[in-house]
Length: 315
Image (cartoon, rainbow, N blue to C red; front, side):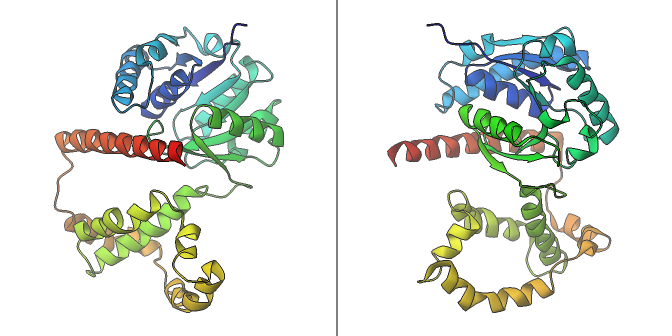
């Protein structure tokens, strides 16, 4: 029996959209690309093919050229969503544009297609409220770069059907991502709130001269980050006291209450503190440096993803 073909429409093919295209194509889906900026759209298939080949070097894509062959450029949004069961939107972080894009997607996409936004900061209720098909709309917020960092946060509006969340979660899991469900809307979702708490304290510690900017980064990448690559915060504290989490709370929460009572405030992102942080970073953000660091990051993330996949296969 021939396997049923599945189709996803990728709306917007910048960095995030191209990564989603690679993920779906690698998983065997037919991928249709649409993008209002013609040069960006024209360049996308070649860039996605290159990324698939890079994944293959680390054993993260079995047939990169076969996956690339499943990617096509659609002549319009209508052509892109025709027959699609999933639509991943990657447009600008702008509420007005999200409202316009989702109105078009809701009008054109098959009535049973899921409409999912990659937005990192705009909750779905702000751009789906007036849609006839609003029950199928939700946020699927990835981590950059999505093809190397598998987490995706699912968050619906109050009117998003539970079945839509469940279907999206199943599809993301099938294509190799790690979906988590944010049970109700909150600004920043969960990942950015956790990242924001750490970043605010980092800005304060560097801005107030407690540590250099580079040593702060070492504290995370050579300390906390090593554990966090395979343990979450609750798993971490479970192992940090003989009696697990209840014991940890009894032993250490007094100290953390003191820290929380004086947590970093919004002033850490204002002058003069932010000026001190910028001055403390000894590197200039030249295009050459950013390009080199991006390539290095992607190679190391690919190697880490391959390592974690191998360990999961053994467990």
